[in-house]
Structures are given as structure tokens and as C-alpha cells.
Figure (cartoon, rainbow, N blue to C red):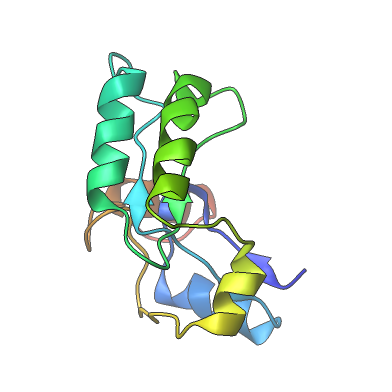
Length: 129
């Protein structure tokens, strides 16, 4: 295993350097399901994901109890993607056949949107926010 996903998609240049220097590849996603959000229905989640997915997409969903309506959304998403010709592969398989986008910073959906987590993490480990 040489892949690492930063919690909340939040990282700093220092943490990226650390992960890389230890032989890991930082992996992000390009489609965030929003499944931990209260009030987000399975139908809305499925429509949103299906509208944004493209070949090579990595979809963030939670199987850790935080995802709300995730299973119901997947029941619609998976058949729809298969009908459109998509197949499901591991990250390692995806990296082997494609050319990954490499970013110097981490973010969930757009640069800067994880700054709240960056500040909390830096304070927690004793660095100046």
C-alpha cells in the first residue's frame, strides 16, 4: 500500500512533502458526494454525482457511518454509470492506465476550501495557524 488520502482533503505543502518523502502518493477525489451532510437526499446526491462524473473520476463517499443515504444513492449511481459504459477499478488500476493530475495543494472541491481544517490541524500539532 503506497497511497494516502488526507482527512477532509486537507493538507499543507509540508504534509505533502512528508507523505511523498516516505514513498506514498497522496490521492484526492474530483467528485465529492456530500454524503455526510444533513438534509441531502439520496436522489439529490445521485443526480449531483452523475452530472459531475467523467472518465477517471474518483468519487468520495463514506462507508464509515458518516454517510447519510449513501447506500440508497449508490443503488442508483452504480447501475447508471454502468449503463453509460463506466467500470469500477481500484485507485492503483486507475493510476496504471491514466495520467494523474498533480496538484501542489489539497482541497475538497476548489482550492482553499479546506483552510478551516488546515488551521485546526496546524494548531493541534503546535504550529502557528
